[in-house]
Length: 184
Image (cartoon, rainbow, N blue to C red; front, side, top):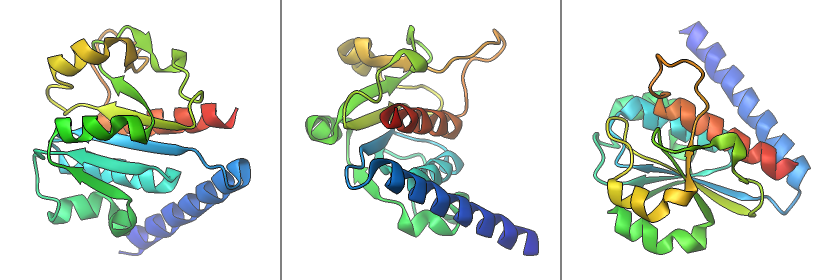
């Protein structure tokens, strides 16, 4: 129990430090980062992505259907005591979110099938950026690949034995790469 309290206090300190650094770096002109999980299936990944979004000042968008209930204690546990503070938006469908996509920012899609590396994308060029991830077992729908093929990015993976990274790990890498580029 004490170890969990220490971890929570340490994570809270890190989140406050990150928020302060972002505020000092960008002042009142803070760029907006949106993370979209399209039909996520695993509650732990969603909880972890939510915590990352909160720490980085990003908004988390979840596109239904979800593979779990948001009321599940596992989602709240993965997001620790931060879950209630996550800027969370729920969408009934990809079509509903896609209609609003232009108002959210410059979209970038993540896929193991992409040819362009995350590092080669100008995530810092637009003031607002939308980072879009597919479900854990199937990724993004073929129709999304067909429509947004030029905006597909992949994570750099050196080993031929690794097919993909965990969804919440990918979210963390992409969010902080976007922040890094926006800061430059």
